[in-house]
Image (cartoon, rainbow, N blue to C red; front, side, top):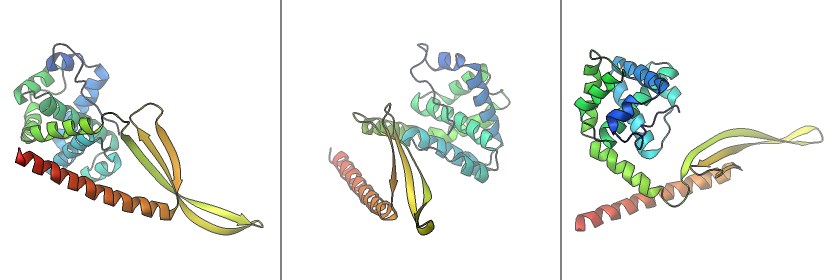
Length: 226
């Protein structure tokens, strides 16, 4: 998914300096994205913001094609809107920039006009109540991703594997072809699975999800006992 991650470590002058020094192509993409955000219904706006938030906090790629259909947009418009939404979330939630300061810096950088700022401000206000939630999610994800390479992408396709005997098709079976990538250099793998292996993996993952939920419940009880 085309996304923009606000460069938190860039610019010794903080948020305003970093916004002002962004390359023109980035400013253009964000400007287009903010224009798209202003045209959306409240439902579509919240959908895009939620998708951008999950990308930032959980590393979950948004399905641009599906979002385009649901929001009535072109895929390029969705990509730009997600970039703008990501910028909004990171600036307000992770950098803890006040809404007025965010708007002022956005206008000064040419990301949107004063006339357009009202709609951007309303979108920003909807995020204000989620600041701590977003920060906590990012902190938890960072802790979880320490030490070992972490999952970055998992893609798959289903192929029909054909076998021949005496120049005639003797059998046809489905095979899952999968690709797993991590956030470490050269740490990726391609592999295939039969249907029975996919079913076993599915059961194992369901069991893993339950164990993770049990662990979270224990952590919550530990915090309450403190």
